[in-house]
Structures are given as C-alpha cells and as structure tokens.
Length: 97
Image (tube, rainbow, N blue to C red; front, side):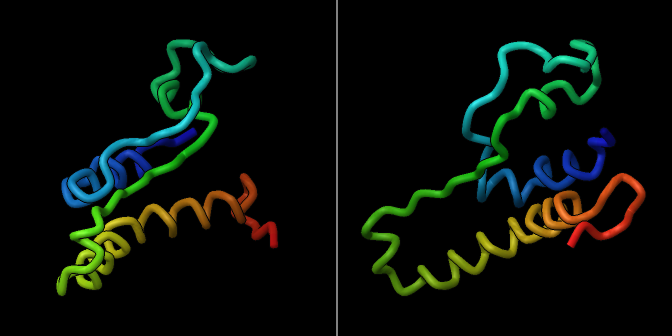
C-alpha cells in the first residue's frame, strides 16, 4: 500500500481545517497478513474511512451557508477522486467497472 497520496490529501492544511480526522471503527491490531510495523498500519487498521462535518442551525440559516458548503466540498473533492480511483481500479491499473 502506497500511502503517500492519501496522506498528502488528508493532511493538507485546508482539508484538516474543514474536515478534521477520520471517524469510525478500526482494528486494535494489524490485520492478518500485515506486519504490525508496516509504515501505513494506521491506515490499514481502519475499517471505515469517514469524515463528518456538523453545522449548527445558525450556520445552516446564515447567508454564507452555501459558500461554506461549497468550501467543504472543494476541500474533500481530492479525497473523493482518490477513493473513486482506488475503488474502481485493480492492482494493474485496469478499470473494474
């Protein structure tokens, strides 16, 4: 697993400021077949790759809400693109769909 690309996305300053960190379940130890000292073990142990963003009622009814949502989607778009590529391409780079 080459984790350089996903780390550059999720650690980008704008992404972090808007979306924060992963939420969701993860394994307590390395999954079977993976070295517990693998450099990407923190990502491999994840069962879910979820980011959430909460808005208050006041934010939702504000004049700037649409712009705030647009900023959030622009920040997460590289993550969507990366995951779409990873989940629809095999190890040889061939499309799965």
